[in-house]
Structures are given as structure tokens and as C-alpha cells.
Length: 57
Image 1 (cartoon, rainbow, N blue to C red):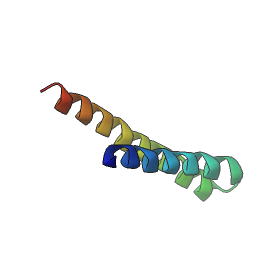
Image 2: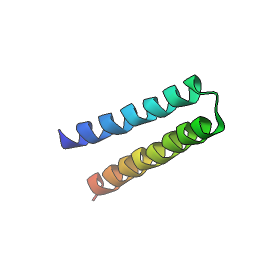
Image 3: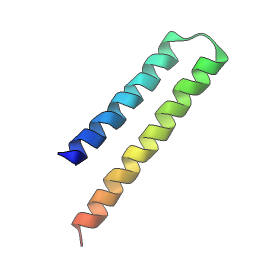
Image 4: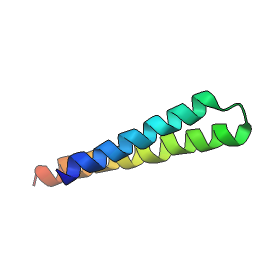
């Protein structure tokens, strides 16, 4: 259950970054949206790889 909750939060924050990126016209908004997408996508991928590695042991 905790795993699904963590993935859900990451996906929601990625979607928030996409929303910020699409709705803002300013440079700072574009930077914040892009960094939000990149950071939380990286965390999500790291968690997936860690879960795969732990389950293969």
C-alpha cells in the first residue's frame, strides 16, 4: 500500500509540473515546471529500479 501511495504522489507531482508548464508564460514558470517533471520522474524511475532490484534478491 505504501508503494502505491508513493508512486501516486510522484505521478501527481509530475502532472502538476506538466500543468505548470502548460499554463505559464513566464520563464520562471517554465523552469519550475520542467524541474518538477525531471526531478519527480527521476525519483519515480529510481524507486522502480530499486523495487525490481530488491525483488530479484
